Figure 1 (cartoon, rainbow, N blue to C red):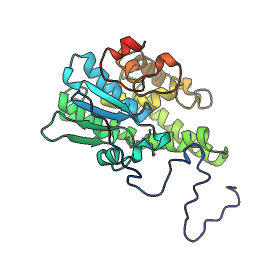
Figure 2 (cartoon, rainbow, N blue to C red):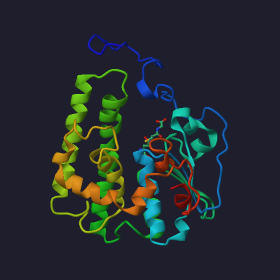
Figure 3 (tube, rainbow, N blue to C red):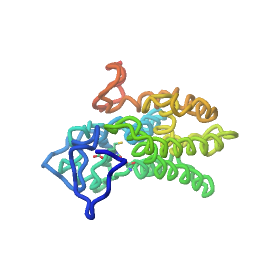
Length: 282
Ligand SMILES: N[C@@H](CCC(=O)N[C@@H](CS)C(=O)NCC(=O)O)C(=O)O
């Protein structure tokens, strides 16, 4: 592979040899590759996920709900190992035809409700429990705006910057430059918004903070891509202040551990079934 001399052929062909870290799982087709039954636990909500930023969004919200005493938000979190291709198992694909974590099954409804896409899961849970999503139309629009901002922006951070800075088999200056510039522009958007606001929408913490924190907060507290210095994230002072405040919330600390199978052992928790799981394993 040489990016300087590459001339695209008339018709693109799948070359499964050079996709970097995710070579094993990337494919140009969708759908299940194998039959696989998913476990279903006793709690109302069944989550199939992994502690990546998209997965953590959901476990943080669930832990915030449980922190407030909402017992109907109790959940079983099962591990989907995307490096091993669990997202292509038949039961998982039936919940998320897009084969990506997180995926949620609400077994408390008359017919079980499937929800995929992390943003949709946040809205579903926030509406179900009427928490962390304002109901006044103007405030709700602001919350939705930042939530959708995250959904639209993070692929440049993850699939763009993160891929080329951390995972690609070779470091390509053109790609790293392009996505560093965009990520820094995004951090500046957040920083300006947070100049006079404690949280993204003002005084109240809501699902947009949870979603944006999982990506951009993790980036600035340096738990994502180890790029704090490279991107000079400390210069985004308002984002850093906001991220540190969110990072210290007990529910956030718990949510980040669920379905985590890497890092220090005391931070790992491959499955979660009960609030006491944290006490036992810590
Ligand atoms: N837009 C989706 C993105 C989810 C996503 O990209 N999940 C990644 C992990 S962070 C995944 O499951 N990747 C597996 C794969 O691409 O096969 C969401 O927000 O839920």
